[in-house]
Image (tube, rainbow, N blue to C red; front, side, top):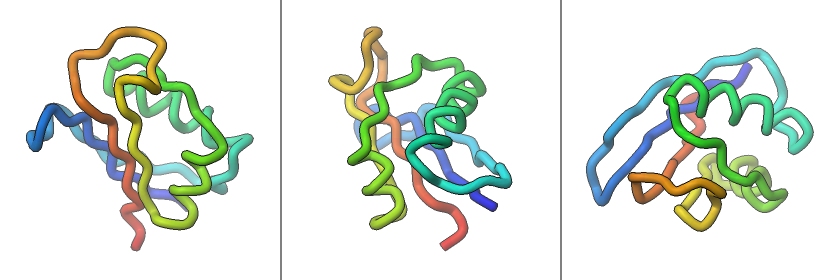
Length: 86
């Protein structure tokens, strides 16, 4: 089971947040599906997912997406995903 706390942030303020739960592994092949579902729920564009993002999540239990990781323009500073099962 995976449980991820997702925060859309501008500066130090949380604009939107949610807890995403799913029964599945966190691998590069499956994580884009989870990330797409998270972004759809928050009504934000889906960022480009790189292998290093998933490695950071597996190793450090969090990942951050900055405006440069999005193809579309965004009105927030970062998208933060944290492992909520720790």
